[in-house]
Image (tube, protein in one colour):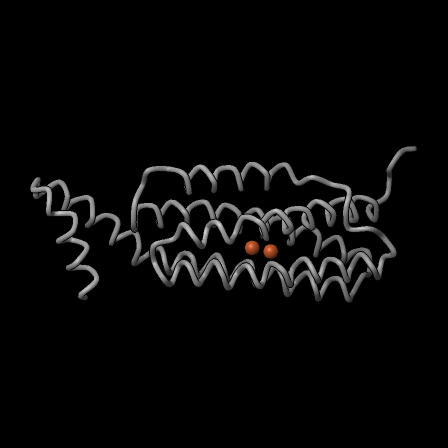
Length: 186
Ligand code: FE
Ligand code: FE
């Protein structure tokens, strides 16, 4: 059977992003655990709660459509989560690791922003008003998360940059712990 209507594509893409959210619900606690910065950790934890709500909103949209949310694997999110895991397992430390975690997380948010922007527009042209407002709420939360990560990265990136130069300048074995102590006393 040929699939030739936008509604089918809409449902397909909703299933894709639903699977993406489910993958993230599993991945975000690991990202939080790997974070050094308390703010970054609580940012991931906060976004985990939002992500659960994103999945619930999609379930509501599916139930209004009389469709099942399952049946699709989001391959893009599998790749993004795999890259996040690579960063978690990598030997980078402290703020440098945090900068890498932010990098992975922002790729995820940008993917979600693209996906939600598209399904929101599909819902709009299909006249699914309730879905439009639910999808828009999620879209805005993804954008806010991305902006928060950018703000966090400001401080974390400069910490990460100074960490490296401190280590290069002083070749004494104690430089690492001194730098750490100096930072935490600020
Ligand atoms: Fe989400
Ligand atoms: Fe998100």
